[in-house]
Image (cartoon, rainbow, N blue to C red):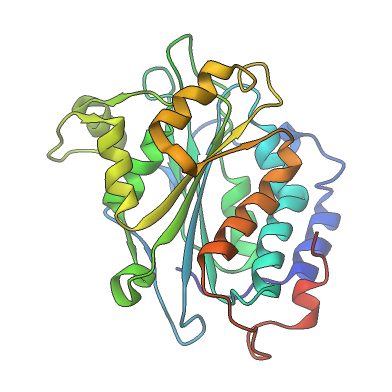
Length: 284
């Protein structure tokens, strides 16, 4: 995956034609069950590969919380946020970003605790995977959500040329307002991923594995009642340290993602062959 190019102007026109700014979350995100294409069961690997079209791929995983009130985050992304992320990267010399969307719920309660797209570069395919996410709005009265599933998947089921060929880590962002669950039992892994050899994992083990080839960040949103609880922020600080990013407004999330990628990636001037003026006309 990862073919095609991203055009801000093309995405803007399509978003206008589809009424993304007028439609509600439920009108855009129409999945009422797990999309078969995003079912992780049986997946061997998701790949971010270099190509003649994209010789310096930069893999970026964005894990979206599909529980409770977090549907506003994908809504923001599909309206303007995706354009802000990709436009900023292209304008600042990251010519070959490849984004994979994950949906993350609660493996103790939900029917679809993990949803997996593909690494893509084109605006059309990124929109396709983003809007294919099933917003289950589940979760439960337990001690958090399954953000650790994104680390488990990234660490064990992705292959990225940026790291394998050039020794450059990719980027993984989880976004939410709850703590993460602390354990991932082997039975839960088997239920989600299918038959295989598994062992019980702690949250620290999944994080360590993901960090082998990704810069791992958690964006904690404080605008909800859950997100504003200081003990939740303290839990994240103890777990992830300086890689915790606290934001007060969901509209800050796209620029936060782009800024972090830019700060950690060698910036090169865009070439005329890969980035045109129309591709970066809307940068906030």
